[in-house]
Image (tube, rainbow, N blue to C red):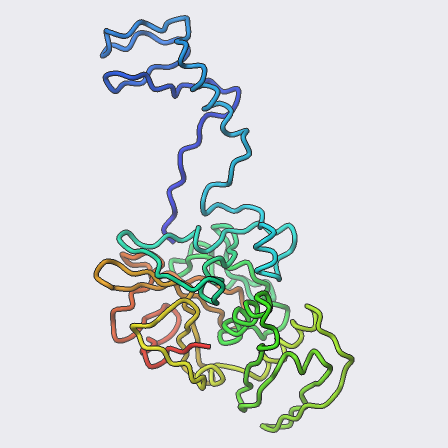
Length: 338
């Protein structure tokens, strides 16, 4: 992942401040004891005394770190109240990096517009763990080292303890979390591989799926429960019986010209694979690149992939296929949209 260049920090309070820029001839003169600037004979020597104008500058430089300003862009910080409401799985004390702040577009590219409140806009704020975080499995084993060239970042998203939240499941999980947080819970519904629809409202009312081979029936089997814990249990049910074939069968099939954050590439199979388009940027020529994220087998942390080329973690979208590090190329015919 290409690191963002942090602004140089000013000296800490109480340290010797040697950063006061004296006008004239482009040289630096300390506000404390120093010899006269050899290239600026017109300026009086500062040895042993202050210039009056330096007081204001010194206070600004020395007290700035104490001012409680915002964290540097892209650096880990406590999640805001708005983020805790938008990404409802986060614990109250979560420390995060929003995707949009942590991963800048390549030089010459700008992020494409997204509709406010859309799945794509929500994904741009996806909370990430600190740099240097490895990808772990649902059992805690290391899948990818933090320095793996194919890894750009790891999402701050629980994976559960069962081997369920894999590739297609991760795409469903994020889309479901967006709907849950955005107040569209009545629209939460995903299909099993068999084609049967698993609806959250029905599950919340107490109905449970009875699966026999490829046959699914719904019967009343529990008390009504619309809690967050019940929602996660419903998602695990979906993960158990849905997969890449479920996503591949979706009718939303955007063109390559219309690709947007929230779309995904999927190749159905046993196994198959799916990667989620987290963001899209374009240059003045109309050429596009995308940030891609995935879960994988076994169930593991959802992570942002890195293309590793001239565009850093962003994947070029100008070819006939989209090439990713862990699967065969995705043709444009495999692009889908919820």
